[in-house]
Amino acid sequence: MALSFTVPQRILHWLMAALILFNLLFTDAMETAARLMFRGQALTPEQVSAANIHAYVGISVLVLGLIRLCLRLVQGVPPEPRQEPPFLRVVAKISHWAFYALFVAMPFAGIGAWFFANTTAGFVHSGPLKLLMWALIVAHIGGVLVHQFYWKTDVLKRMTSGR
Image (cartoon, rainbow, N blue to C red; front, side):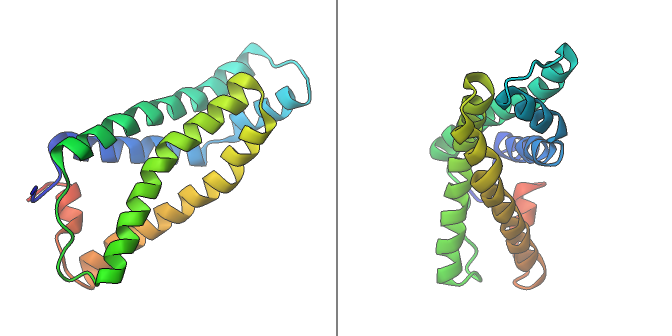
């Protein structure tokens, strides 16, 4: 069993974190373009280009997420720290798999909305899936802080510098 995440796993984690935060924080161009598109209004080339940045970042998250999932299945992950209560181990496992599900579901919903003008996909993408992603990020960071400062485990170090 691995004692730390591998270098490729750590790079993918932080690269995806940056891309996901970018897309969660900078949504104005896509929201404007989608609003116009769903009203049947024409978009300027600049609006399409600006919205495409969001789309291509999302597609990158999809591809990187699938690569990351493959690495997880092939290389494994470090065991849960002994200090973590069993119930919270289950919660952590569920939340990690929920992240992987969102790495696939959010981009596909976004693709459905942007490339196929599907309003339901757009609602799901920018509504419940986005809210769930934010909730998981907050819980993930909270969990890391509890590990670092309360249980004093090496969880953060395993995803930054390794052991």
